[in-house]
Image 1 (cartoon, rainbow, N blue to C red):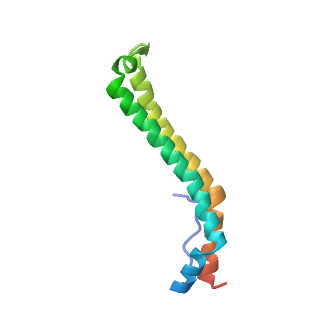
Image 2: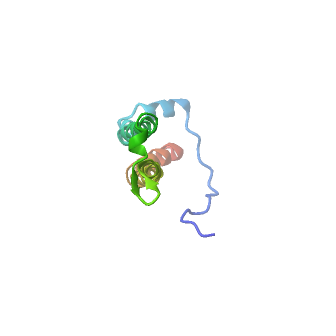
Image 3: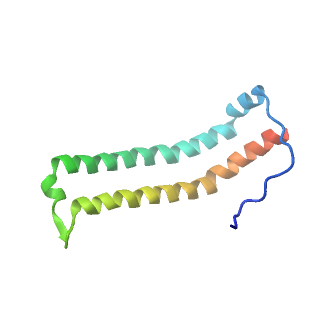
Amino acid sequence: MATDAPPPSKQQHRLPTTEEFTEVQESAEFGELRRSYRSFAFPLTVGFIVWYLLYVLLSIYAGDFMGTKLFGNINVALALGLAQFVTTFLIAWWYARHAAAKLDPKADAIKSRMEGGA
């Protein structure tokens, strides 16, 4: 099976000290990484939970609306239920792109600096 990841390195990495972890955690670079993650993940999480709860509440209290036929045997409830799956996969795909473009480079820079002792 082919992968994009390089083989594991035989080189031993230095383990950072507790003070180094604390220093990095308090750095502006780490703060920017955390801010970038939170500004993406938190709003999407809240949005998806609201979307999910809306679906549940509509299922409980708007049975007539959810039972409305769109075409054939497909009703609003089925269409919205399938949309839940679609949005889940879209959010996962979007997060993977965001992480690869914005989070991973910053995290890799911090990691390599800590392991290399620079």
